[in-house]
Length: 203
Image (tube, rainbow, N blue to C red; front, side, top):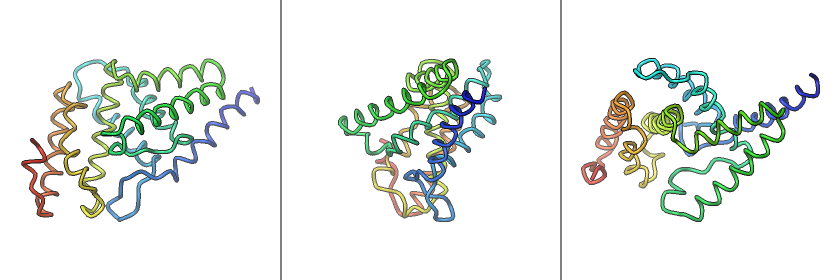
């Protein structure tokens, strides 16, 4: 058992990097957000939103998926969504580095546990099951909530338009769609208060 626990400890220690791996998101107090902080609130969102959905989701799978979805960034680092938006080369490099990281995590962990982590991560990336689609939608929605809470001065121009591109992730489910609409309303108000016209951004 000690050898197994030593293997598990390797991943636990590796995950400590997520506490200081910073995202392109600022908190309401002006400090940059870590990947670990994003994952924590995303887990909370999953716990609070899942019971509102009529379908019976596998709650344990959803939470596990949310917890491990960014674990690869302990090795691959965080790449902001806007960097891959219109850049296939950066997107391919990001995917390759993340695949290498998830294979490494799979191989460090005891066989069955390693396979489970690998399979959950791949399921999240495929976005085909209800749990994966829900996890992905909440991931994107949490990021926008954080942007809405931060100073508008921390937003890049590309993020103005991205605030209204959440539908492709959330509109598959009525509860997530309504949540998206609330979040977009907050973004719209924040941008307008800063003197930024939003009608063209929504088009």
